[in-house]
Image (cartoon, rainbow, N blue to C red; front, side, top):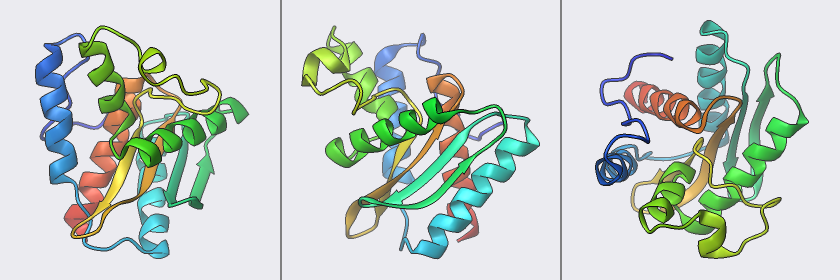
Length: 168
């Protein structure tokens, strides 16, 4: 995985520190605008990074209910497609990354499923989906990855979003 200036702490690190780091990422990584072209460029950036690292992932970028970018790299399956859809639903419903949604419930001593009683086959709070938040607007979509561990999926998305915003 590509080195990041502010990597997300591993989940076995202090849970409150990890949650604080995730919240900081969401405050920091905000788009000025988010167009269809932005979704395409962000998706392509993530695919390029994944290919360069030999990662078998699915990349999915959405605005609202519309899927604007989807790529399934070699080594993935329809199972990964299902995971990105389920992760995107969590971001759409709760407005936070799936990793943050998951760890908030772990900190409360329960699973995401226990806390929210949402259908498991429709919602997945495993790390790897991140909100597309536009300044002055709020969450307008999501970018999701599936194929690695939840921590690695999250890191790939965050490093990609950070690189995209640095170039914008």
